[in-house]
Image (cartoon, rainbow, N blue to C red):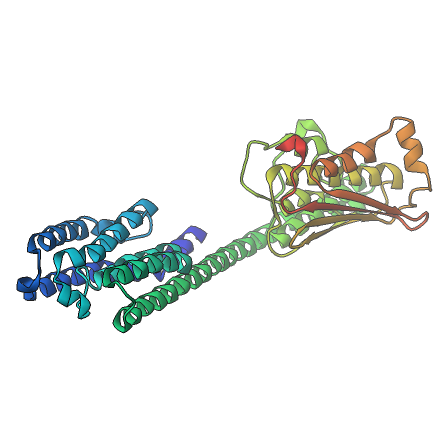
Length: 410
């Protein structure tokens, strides 16, 4: 559905009618330039130069119509060659035409066909490309006249302003189309998520809730099964509400608790992928009855290596919570997507870390925080800050720069 909406947005693109208009413009202005030459044929000093040029212009215009039918085939090399044809016609005008006509302000041989070449630059590359092409045309026109006459300046300024304006409009239209396509993707994803949520609510969640109630009623081993069903119900509700899907994992590899992926799995998997990863999808599986997960509504995109290493550091922090704060401790994961980086905060309500305990642990060779957390963040060019007050829990703030890449990952 999202693909269909994107294709529909592309069909509505403002660029397509502009390319079609440019194709027609080039043909019409080519005919117009040839008619101007035909009516003033007897006044040309070297008619054969003009005839050769208009023959080349006609063949070039008709042969390159497919090139200006869309942005894909309108390459930089073609644009350069097309502008060369226009500039050559302007500079050859004093050679072919009479001096009196050139001084009197007669149009150049390509006439307004030149504007089509400049407009191709504008539609393809925006206002900066248009400014470059129109400036070259301006220099050629002044060179052809020998001096900047009023008519020349008027025509040059007109082409310069018009091409830059069209180029700017094209850039704005492209940005609007990207925003529209993104909005359509989000809308389609939201509808699909709502459909899945309804299906899951009517089946899986109700079964888990029933198992939890019956287990509590029966007691014994059934009570433990009911408790586990309740935890899975909470985790599944979290995933459905956020629209995130947990990573597939081999059950034989073991679990770290709370449905979260193991740190080693996250650090090693998917390294060959070069597409940005949504950090939320890596952290969402940690959510459960004792782990709350808060994330932005939009994707939090990071390079694959950075995302997996950051998720592994979060997994290590949660392991420390379970190991040192006890199985009854609650934890909170907060993801903040800022302009210059991503911040993930892991907080718990455990007893906290006694002062000097981390230094003692490192001295004894237990390097969980030093290597699993701080080491990973340091390789990414980020930082890991740990704040702990005895009796008030522990907070770990992991910060990764947007373009951060550790030396070991280059």
